[in-house]
Image 1 (cartoon, helix red, strand yellow):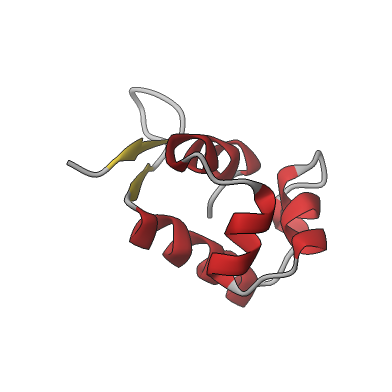
Image 2: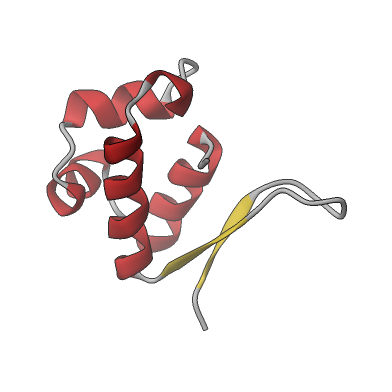
Length: 78
């Protein structure tokens, strides 16, 4: 599952506003704000998170899973 930090980082990499992410993903701006807040993605639905992840990946971001060597992250696809 994506973290709120990964979503914020991915938006920053793409230079997308929360509104742009809402437009690209089809998820409401209020939901994007809630997911990126301290409440985090745990309180959202799977389809919303999937739509956000797909939109960011189509935009050119690759997500890095948390593993033994470090935390979760995001980077631009090569």
